[in-house]
Image 1 (cartoon, rainbow, N blue to C red):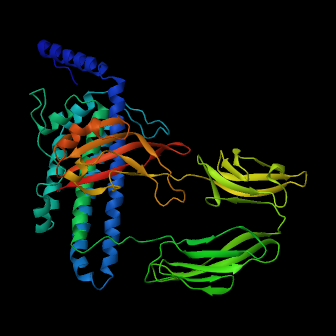
Image 2: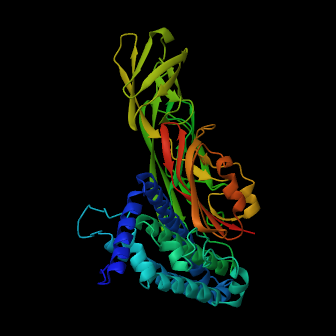
Image 3: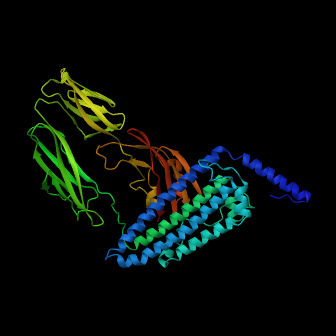
Length: 509
């Protein structure tokens, strides 16, 4: 700020600079940290919404190739592309504004590894956004974006004229002098708070794009989920048998389609594939020793290409006097769970069988019954010392229990009716399609962020526990057009506490 020659005005300007410095000193580190936390959540939310938009666009591309949906897709796919093109321009403009503020706050991208800047500076945002013209340009860009988005098609305008999260009303302020849109948001605002507000506008833009693209897709049909990974599912009823015992092989294909069943060959012989997409074949084990049989799964992938994968199955055929270890639940030991094992010493009494494990603990619960609790992923070797004979070693794979999925009700995010969302208890973590039954995770904390309709200024709150009760007043304010992001989700369960990916809900009537 240049100082004028007139003494009275010079004194006023000096007092303004002193006041600005004093205000900067009053921005606590806790407030700055809170803004950074919200900013990170908003950027994650934008990424999640962007992935959802990409899935809709990929499905529309698929529908262009299908005779029954081609005509409609040729109408609505270009409209969805237009929404994307509009979004790219305004999103980049907001990012350029962010970069200008960061540069004004002494952020230097040339310093590798140094991301610091003057987070509590009150002058940069005021100078660039209010005294300069960036704030007015931002307002106009958002207004034009909203108008152009609604102008893509009359049906889009009818659906979203009052339902896009971009709110250009001037928020209520305590200082009546901040009577313009840019002043209400950016006058005497710390740098980190201005960046967070700009991230909020970017999130509003991405959410608006997602709503319009989803609407275009609905005019054509439901989402086509493209499978890009095919994994043979192969298992056996046992890996250790006695000579003459029966063994059953189950084989099929992950991502299977009932109209395109795989063909399965087990040990050189063809096997019938059932309605569930799995082939089952039984045979009698014979000949003592370690055996291997090959299971071949032939299938056609989603691009019409023929594929073939071979999975070897290893098993051991023992003699009637041989020792054995079998897992009562599954063939893998999991960290944090009680893995039940049956240990048999063959033709000797249970009291002469002394097992040990090199990964975790092994506790006896009854004659021949043990619980293994491994401590690290990899392998666990269980050694049997039987009546002073040569030790026998049995190997087991050790895995970590997979991460659960965060949900509200039955939903993992996306569009949700306002009243349905308000009726939910809170956030939960669910372990889907896991081999063990009854394994549970409990949500211990989360952060919830509200943007869009009824929230011109984003609001967020960190919550301990899984309940919505602490944020019920904010939830009750939500309405059609509100975006709710649940982030920083922590869930406790087998193996400790996990951090789960964020989930985003676009509330609708």
